[in-house]
Image 1: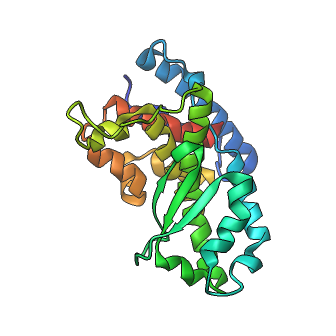
Image 2: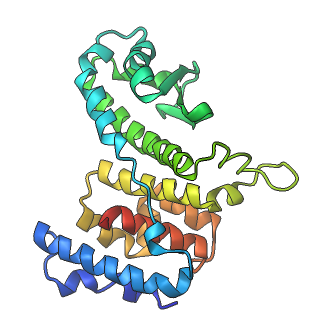
Amino acid sequence: MKPYKRMFGEYCLIVGDPHTEQNLQKVKNNLRKELIEEYKSFIGDWSFLEAIIKPTELNQIIKYIEKYSKFIIQEEDNIIDRFNFILNNSYKIYFIDTGDYSDKYILEATQPNNEIVLYMSTKINDIYQNKNNFDLFLKSFSEIVGHEIIHRLQKSKAKITNIFKDIRKNSKGKIDFQRYLSSKQEIMSYSFQAIEWYRNAGYDDSKIIALIKNRDKAKETNSFIKLYHDTFFISDSPIIHRFYKYMYEYLVK
């Protein structure tokens, strides 16, 4: 496979200034064509167009939460109950209070019976009458829930419910994190999370392209990218290739 330097490197320069909307679209179109050609030999009969699943419902959920933000943060007590009141029936998203303190709002996410369950730390109380903290929470929420919505859609598309059953375990029933991260479903969800993190940090798509065309810089600036590089040490790994492929598709499609 040809080096990524060729694949990502000069196309932003060919069309001029990538920071204008018009030229950025040209960058994306050129990049998409190059991705298709580059991956044909690599993926064989695994179609490029099999591609990504977008969590299209996510923006609607975020707007819904913002609409009821005053209701949610009106008082410190029962914040989780108010989240559940507005999200349970409409979106099958459930918050559970763990009572544990952390610097993270969301400690873990699971998806039993096609419901997204978020295990919350006591940090959630920091959003009480604090718009800045509320916005920080929403960014964390969008990354994690976007990840889980993709899984929900993957299950629906596959028309099976046990697509992720024991995905973390090896043949001896022990946790195998590398096996977990190498599944196509997780690569897709984590690549979305990586792009969503960049956008939540204030980067536009042209800046994100500039960052991730250099893999060393990418893994220094994004913990999700670093996770995959640290887990799959060989940069020419098919897992790493697929991860970058999905990231670029979330940018250009």
